[in-house]
Length: 255
Image (cartoon, rainbow, N blue to C red; front, side, top):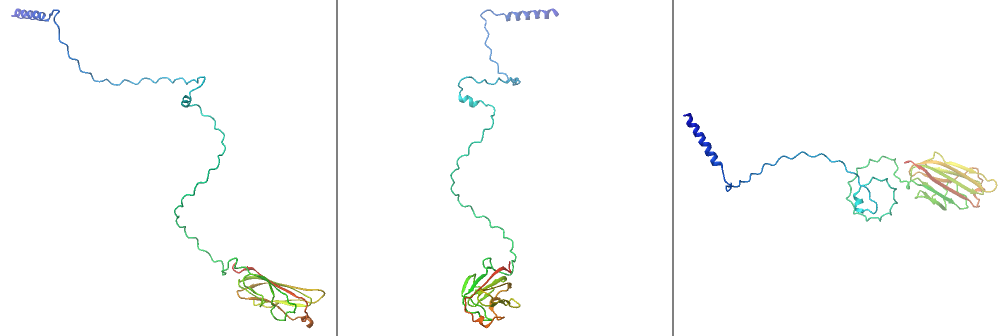
């Protein structure tokens, strides 16, 4: 039985060898191309190259465009140039919108009982009596010429000053005559009249007097002649005489 199987094996090998042989005219068929494989992974980045050498300026003319591309070192700051001409004034722009109203100011304080402005507080006068007759005793002296006055405080016809601005005033008079004379300053603000006298000597007689008086509104001040030691002949004297009466406000009560 074992010899039988051995014989079969030999026959099979012989058939295999006979089938594998081919003469020159024996040709096979071309095979089909294979499918493309999957792409491989990216490789590692290469090493960084060394820094190149700086450019060298060539001799001779250089292209301006090349110079613009070459960046040189920063130079020193130059000197300030001259100021240019002033430009023309531009046109006025349109008006802006009105601003918001400001806050109310602080409440004003009381400046005193007066209501006079600095101009209204002025008060001054000066008048001259030029008649040659002797002024009558105990009568108000009147005047022919008003040299200066502010407002209507002084009346030359009545010879009286009437206070309009309460305050402190200075009143003065001067007289020149060739005879003895006595004059006094009178006022409702004075406790008594202030008298001054000059008796005849040689030449012209000069008489001067003055007083500082504090006045309230509507109080009056005037000048009058009075009898003292004059002789009757003095009152009949007709030589030229001159009396000047003046007054002015020093400061008002509201100051």
